Length: 185
Image 1 (cartoon, rainbow, N blue to C red):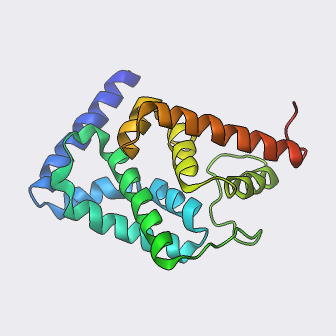
Image 2 (image 1 turned 135 degrees about the vertical axis):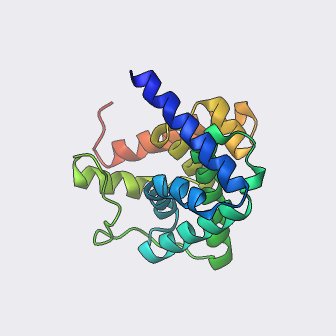
């Protein structure tokens, strides 16, 4: 039953992508709205600011609509959108050349599941110690559950680089958590 539902979802996505590729704006908007929250969350991780994150969502919508014809595999629409979001966020940061540190009052990005909010804020603070490449790989691996091979393809990096970057990033996170006395040995 779950497999049938997933197959229907994939077929719907493929159908809507094909319609969007023929210029159907409603089909594109229907697809885009399914992933808008994920796009916002991804953008927010990079820019730490609701307004800038919303600008990146808008930029992602524009870029993805204008480039929908370049999507070869419709079943990877979400992955394709997240890649566009990451690139738009990195472009924004390069353009603005500013870093906005997360402040406790800036908690617009509240997880959908019930978790310890102080731990969530601490984890976001710790993520700030990662480079943009490390942050991208950690997000794709642990937030979006992509395999190393998929991440390699999405970010256009060699598989070995993806693996070494993720292990380096995880070691940085572990070290920071131990310093903050949050993580056990």
